[in-house]
Image 1: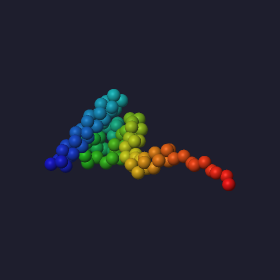
Image 2: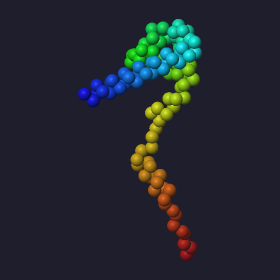
Image 3: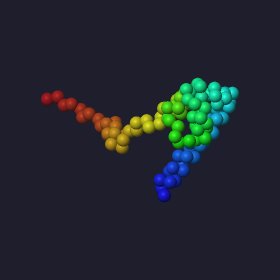
Image 4: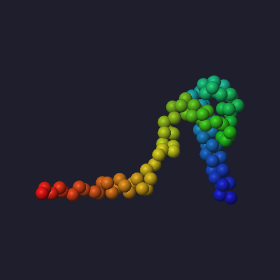
Length: 104
């Protein structure tokens, strides 16, 4: 049941992205044909993207975001995160102080 909710959530997000893509295309006064040509895909692919179809290749979406000057919004997706161990090490490193050297 949990995986069905997850699939529903992904479907909802794709639908929302498709609606936003359509609005952005219309704001640019691009027809589906013109936008498809700019993307290098068929009109059917643009239609599928705007419907939120999960079968559209991620490359088509990335190209669309680039054309709409929105590719930067994905730069943090799957960005490497500092692990808990790395955070603890950094914290310890910041707290450590060298002992003064004694001269014989």
